[in-house]
Amino acid sequence: MAQWQCVKNCGACCYLNPADRPSLEYFLTPEEMAFYLTLVGEDGWCIHYDQSKRECTIYADRPFFCRVEAEVFLALYGVPPEELNEFAIECCREHITDMYGTDSPESQRFEAAISQS
Ligand code: SF4
Ligand code: SF4
Image (cartoon, protein in one colour):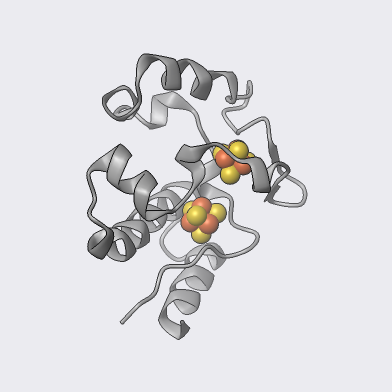
């Protein structure tokens, strides 16, 4: 069974342009939404995402909605812990294919990583 994991040099979920995430206001409170918007740079990427290194510059202190953790996904999306793995895999697939394409190196690396876990 595939096991979710984040792969290095991806960052697809760090493209925060709200135009590409129409359901945000459904999941976030108005206060959380206001905070989310403070993170969005002019080019749509998170201001804390280093595009040259393809990594989060505040990883240890990243916001709760960036964390793939059971309590976060339960609170945000109503996903029970036993469904977290499958849900997280689908979230990543959606972000990665939207950003880089289905046959992209990023997609291939993600699929290889989760199948080898
Ligand atoms: S889309 Fe998934 S694999 Fe890519 S950076 Fe985000 S959490 Fe990691
Ligand atoms: S805070 Fe970090 S993990 Fe969250 S969107 Fe920004 S760069 Fe990505």
